[in-house]
Image (tube, rainbow, N blue to C red; front, side, top):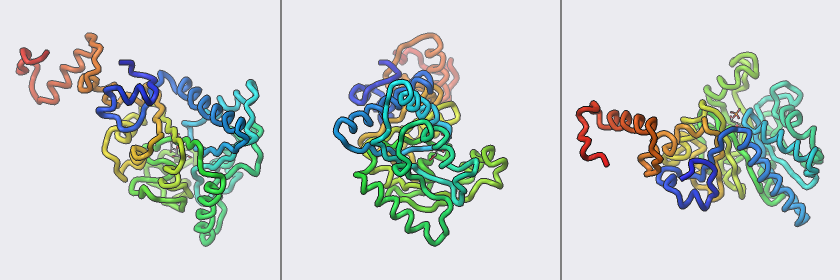
Amino acid sequence: MSNKVLTKEKWEASPFTKKEKIHTQLYETSFSASTAIAVEIADMIREKQSLDEFCVLGLATGSSPKSVYKELVRLHKEEGLSFENVITFNLDEYYPMDPNALQSYVKFMHEQLFDHIDIKPENIHIPEGTLSKTSVGDFCFSYEEEIDKYGGLDIQILGIGRTGHIGFNEPGSSSQSMTRLVNLDSITRMDAASDFFGEENVPIKAITMGVGTIMKARRIIIMAWGETKAGIVAQAIENSPSDNVPASYLQFHPNTSFILDAAAGSELSRRKIPWTLGVIDWNPELTKRAVIWLCETLTKAYFEIDRSRLQ
Ligand code: F6R
């Protein structure tokens, strides 16, 4: 059984589902994974164009989607992909945040995507970091209404934080939560410290779409690259859903895919302990790992194991 890119149908028929509760595709590199995500988005935009409809995209910031945006820009410039029918809603923004500040998500989105494509400025929606405290509630309500007005999100793309957050829905967030003002987790603030030249400068709050807002999207693609995400990704995909890891709520969504590079998928059972899934293409290295795992699991030394029972 190939360890890598399985369509949902093939994945559903695979032994990986003994552990994995969300459709998961493993790519060798983040580049190939990002290209695949961009192709899916481009296909949706074109399909909607052929029907003379809007394509409503939920967008994320952070390092993960940068390569997806780069590929979308290339598709626009070299292959004529138009964004004229595209409406976007960004997941979140720090609060307070000046849109012209270095760290603002408005600036990020313009630099990474909007300034390089033919999207209409009035079709771009990003939570506003300059609102007064008293007007945030109304704004959040109207953000939800605006998404609904366009018929809901066709595709929502997500990254995952080390806390397991999606958007800025930190551990403890409810699965029903809607767009709102939230407090950022200390780990999230630590991860943003270098962007703000020190953790003490990272805002304490942010406006974020809720888990419930995200779950209403018809298609969700969540991406993760690199070893630092491997542990939290495995928890989101393989553990029971819980508010400790908000990304695990995606197990309840019928059309979500986790798209990972090899490093981000390295803690999944299919990679770490494939023999427990019966997916075994034995080689000397795997045999050694399995024996060590068995000794650890049984808390026995190698010579104490009854090897006649190992078939
Ligand atoms: C960004 C967002 C966050 C990030 C997450 C991962 O709009 O909502 O949830 O997706 O923190 O960030 P990166 O991609 O920088 O690792």
